[in-house]
Length: 267
Image (cartoon, rainbow, N blue to C red; front, side, top):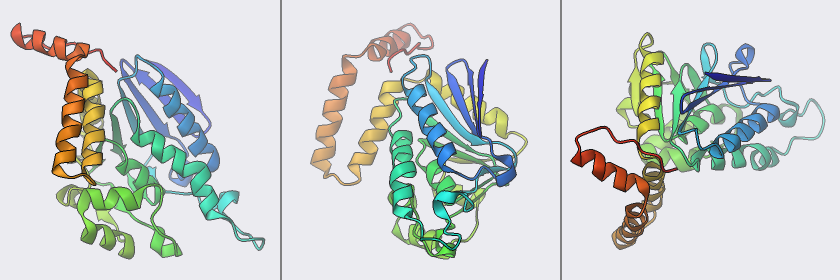
């Protein structure tokens, strides 16, 4: 196991799984310009490493991420000029959201506690989201007169539909992990005691699956939201043509024929 500790971020690699842990426990892992920059750098580094086949995003302590740190100088006025919040989104959150959602390996959000505001937004941009039974999701923006950001207006309606997305955004009420699973916001709600073991098992499973095919599946599902059936079929044909010439398809066929577990290697 390889571990790197940075200010407010912990990176740990075990086998082909890289875990990025937000580590500002005293502020419920709330986000600052420094932390978002470090997280973006860590994701970019992981994307370039051929030995990384899955990335876990989680939080230290009792929270996943409480969203933007409202004490961060970038978002506070303190009697001076009002901050350019659009500039904060453009500088820090837009590149982070785009990088997280375009990773060349599957991503797993392990929501170990409250996920609020931008923290919830980033979790929902991961490919698979699981949460402790005690975790809560909060679209906290309306409470301070803002709109959901960091990709939330894109992700929410795709995950749960317009009515649920608007309700979550407008009322900003706490949503339990069980209810989040029930409405399709997350993949699974897991008991607290079993959570760490289940997360590790899921991540290890993702790391053994055909990475390139998983990423293309994500891309096609996202594109299909604004495509006609014919366009989706054409995109599927292009992807199958590409993947049919890749090593993982050959390996998958060989493993099936010899009744053994496949050893996928494409990325």
